Image (tube, rainbow over all chains, first blue to last red; front, top):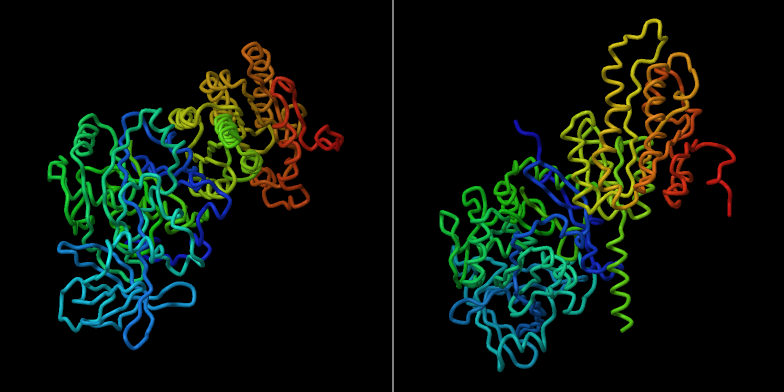
Length: 361
Length: 254
């Protein structure tokens, strides 16, 4: 019988949860810690994000998500005057939205499964949200659900409404609200993510300059993140992505010449792998993806990753295991060791926490 | 304008961050030296045979040091030595090389000493430090660095039972003094440090079953190391220091 794996069994102690942005801890964005996993030689190195250029080689390709974070949390009330918080997760085709219904809590909002199809929420400024069906629609309309497909009726475009009335989505390990700027990466050019694509948060203009001067390439993709499956162990659902033709060409060229393709974040892995054929060639593409990377669908193009630290059982961990395998490592052994080390050394979890670089030779 | 200036200063500071390599850094004196370097902001490459102990040391050191690269393995292994120096090169060079790893060997009278045991003692205590110096020399030359070789008073006096270990340290001392002269011109300095008796695992091995709790912990040498790393290497090159010397310079308050 295999020994108990840390990643299956660990409970995240409160002191390892990043409860505030690194800036509030007196650090620059790129001064967060970086655990470097050279998985092909099973080596684990402690570093800082600002030292990233040391761990990459000329010709390596970093692929970043250019999606900007929107203020996706809205206060809402029902006709009987109950208060709720709605999280706008994902715009679906036909302008329907996937939304999460939550109730106000003492620190931050809490999950709520009491809503039912047909519930009408009133928003500030005269907007309305009507729940249509549980999402994903797998059983009956009457099923209990956290996520709903909904119609959002506003007098103005959704993005400008959110800009005026929304606030960044925040979970209870973050004790107080922070300005929207804390939730943007330097690569954000097109708003649309319900939650920050946080793997790129530590990048600074200076660091990018040093990377580029060292011969590292950077290419963009877009994936608008939905709400995280943090409180429940749900499979990832559909998200909107776009892989431009120039990026597809750069990834294919990097792979041909034996350079690493390092995805900055799980969102980038998802976008790139969605448009990769079974021989590892990438084509440009755009649409909604429901791809899940795990043992049944190993990676074809991506072979390195920068990411945060993930919670036990999170579906993201299955993806991280596949990155380790693609980079030439023993996926469960290395991940187990890396997470043990990260906890021992006091690395921080979540969107304001520390980073993990996973690469091969 | 002010902001631009501070940005530039900050970049320069990062660029000038220093790099040190310490062998035998999993525990004892090596870990103490690595801790001093970590709190001084050095990027560290650390070696040690016990992979788990080395990983634990790296985890602890990473709370202060901006970078910690643990390289597990036996320093008599050429690949391990190449990895140690390769790691330093990747970080940008080497300012301080601390040859701390050593082996005690059998303690006992020379009349019954199993002479072939030298076969392991010399490669660990003398051979490996010399090869590391050779491999590190281009990096040390570029940054006008410092070589620190750890020695013992058993190298200079006759302690019954300590002959073989003392012989290896005596050899290391002569080689280090020779290096100091040979490398002076290219700006690389070499020093010898005798840390004195300490309560370490190695010392316990020398006195099996005896209570050595009267010996100080290796932390007693911290003032010395802070003093040493404050010095211009060129000004201390060629010296032999006894870290626990009572009226030493590093214990004088300026």
